[in-house]
Amino acid sequence: MLNHNLSDASEQPCVVVAKDHNALVISALNHAAARLGLAIGVPLANARAICPDIAVHDADDIADAATLNAVADWCDRFTPLVALDPPHGLLLDISGCAHLFGSEAAMLDTICHALARQGFAVSAAIAGTAVCARTLTRHRSGCVVPEGQEAAAVQPLPVFTLGADDAITRGLRRAGLKTIGDVAARGRHEIAARFGAGFVALLEQALGERDAPISPRRPLPDYMAERRFAEPVATDAAIARTLSTLARTLIDSMTRDGKGARRLDASFFRTDGAVRVIGVETGLPVTRVEIVERLFRERLDALADPLDPGFGFDLIRLAASRTDDVVAAQRDLDSHVHDSDEVAALIDRLAARIGGQCIVVHLPQDTHIPERAMLALPAQQHLAAATVAAWPRRAEGEPPLRPLRLFAPPEPIEVLADFPHGPPAAFRWRRGFHRIALVEGPERIAMEWWRSERSQPASPEPVDDDFARMHPLRGEVSVKRIDPAMLTRDYFRAEDRDGARFWLYREGIHEREVETFRWFLHGMFA
Image 1 (spheres, rainbow, N blue to C red):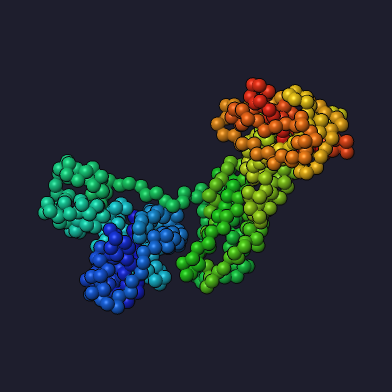
Image 2 (cartoon, helix red, strand yellow):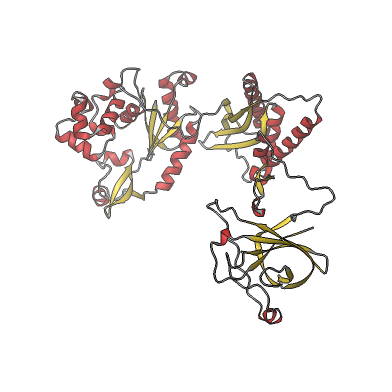
């Protein structure tokens, strides 16, 4: 387990201050300031008295977190298991990775020197447990603890290096326990009774007696291939050639296991520490190298922020973060399989260029509520579904019962009708007056009372006074109503004298749900 803490490596005395109980105190400092005798928690006024020319910066937790995440992205080149150890640390699980860099000591030296070139001061250590490594970084850097020697490595260290609460640290010192070895020599039940079981667990992890797994920032990909370069590459041709080679390696590994890629992520590590990750998704599992090449070509060409190699990439990685089993299909006799493949390839290319959420497919839902009869899903998700819903067939030679166009939400209208149960005779909509020549209905639709979330109908438009005087039988806004989301609807298919066809409904049942009605226009027939 490798842990390293980061700070500014400038030689000028520099401190970061934060407000604590209405006073500015030091929350971070560099080595030059530490050599002056300053420490975390010292008031800023005391620091200025010691060094009047000291550089002071306000604490910015958001910027610190962004920097820590950027360094964590860069550390992915050493191991995919990188965890945050706030506020200033990272934990790297390097199990099985150290031999790629020569040895654990060589790997530690490589990481420290690379971060130092980026302007950070690093305190790093390698140990069998995360807490042991973190404890060592608080006292000395560059320590590699052999397996089973964690207790011997941390016992001489001061108790504050455990990172426990200040109250616990002060209590240990008052009890005469100044080092971790002093604490470890006491009985565990005695320590637990005084300082709690949490501190005992922390102590045992530092001593290597127990361990707790780290929580990586990203899950480990199913398959991964990468290539390191002795000399950084920066040309589009070299990048495309590398992606093609990595795709071939990745596809070969997945094919042996009967898998296909559903999501692929290409990571580009620049020499200056910047990392760019570009991902593509597919509707069906991908098992061909040329498809991967085409998708990444489309994705790279469509980037709003083009891929900037800077001084070049020294590492390119291709990972399959999501895979599915490949289902064999009869491709020689079934022509529909080829058609589906072409449609899936087209959807994947469009999704790579403009985004998967922009390509949707409309599926039917099992409901009698008109506005809920259709569900829009990403087309790639629809392709991956095991079952495909089918729209109901319309009777041959019969007119459609539902309009092709629905308004969302339904638009309020002013209606002339015989109150309470008469069909509409005329209505005003969008400042236009329509006299109805033919009408069919009503078709009663009750709402789904068991649903807890419902959309509220839109408020009606202002009533036209001239229209009210000319048509005294128009529908009025109800004054006594129950929950609007539960009102029954009576739908009418109506055709005006110009041949336009509309789908209207009145809201509520007279004397049971409302005293008077509200009318809405829900859609138009083609």
